[in-house]
Length: 301
Image (tube, helix red, strand yellow):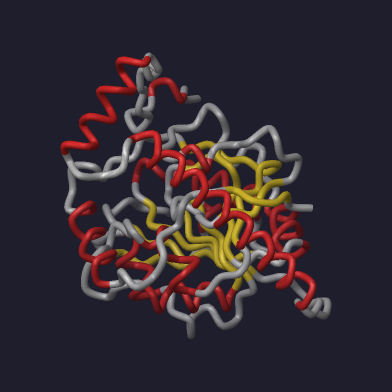
């Protein structure tokens, strides 16, 4: 079990000294830099957040009213795809025990030569190849490969599913017309973004404009859109994709499901890699698309 207080990705900040002198100093600094005073910037930012949330909420209402209810399928079929190495082997075993083979197919990318000879892995398809997570997804988890699956779980290999029910999670996705969603991270998880943590204010979950790609779940159609957004020759760490997903892919409904949680057991390890640089290249290349503001709006039912 891990503790969020140990997370290297969690940034602690000191409370701001809201004194008249401090405010004056901030305003003078902004004046020297020829930009609006700090408090004005903060006020404008908060207004933008509220306006964006209101627009998304209205669009979600319209989308849900217009959405034609799906006919009942004969059989749910999901794909679980993940790069798995030695450290993630035990978590994969737990996921297979929890999810089973009846509703799931498993496509596993082994990047470090680990052997999976145990009986529990017999139903998995393995590809042995060195590479990074989103390189594998672009090369192998193609729309054509996913045609027979209703949902695609594309997860990292350091996730613990002790308290997670995939059936309830998918029922919530279908009930709320979610195209892309993730389970919330438990409060004892390593995390980088607060929006991904379990929010006690929501019994079920919330509509959001952002879903982290650590434990993301897509409908088949939503995955095709996301796959088309991904680059084939760089950005294999995947940074920047969640920021543009809603705008680039045209998703109407995304969400974080708070009543279904998982544990992220390891800190993020990509800060000192090429990931930030490649993210910047990707975002600059696609700057016409709106970046997620990482907001929650509206309750899931």
